Amino acid sequence: VTQTLTSTGSITVDDDASASRELRYSLHVAPAGSAGVPANFSMDQNFPNPFNSSTVIRFSLPAESPVRVEIYNIVGELVMTVADRTFEAGRHSIPFDAAELASGVYIYRLTGNAGTEGMFTDSKKLLVLR
Image 1 (cartoon, rainbow, N blue to C red):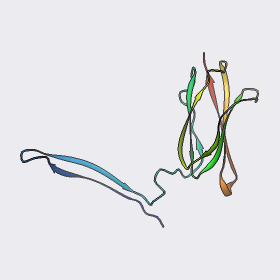
Image 2: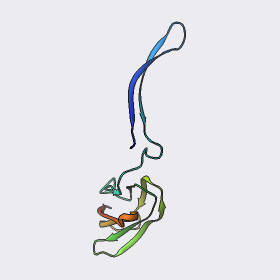
Image 3: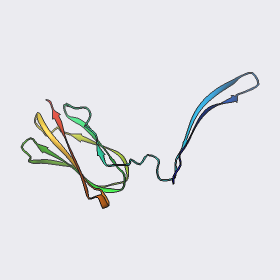
């Protein structure tokens, strides 16, 4: 059983004898190792999309995993590999420079190891405009 504590409130701070101010706070306490770690694998739509020369691909990992991000043209040919390495658990952003690509629709695919659940794969479209 894990519990999370959230508290909000305010405190008064005396700066000197003639002035005081109220500060508002919000405190969130979670079990060690759980803060900021996503519950599931996911991949977001790249942003901006459409784009001219560069965009960002974001994804989330619930555990450390080898990840491969590949770009395919519309007929399914591998155009380039954007990432092929192990990432820690958490949210990640990969800048993607499409300066070498012609205008058109491309598919980006993320593949990762979901541990006992097998492999995770997700694909999305991106649009390069020149």
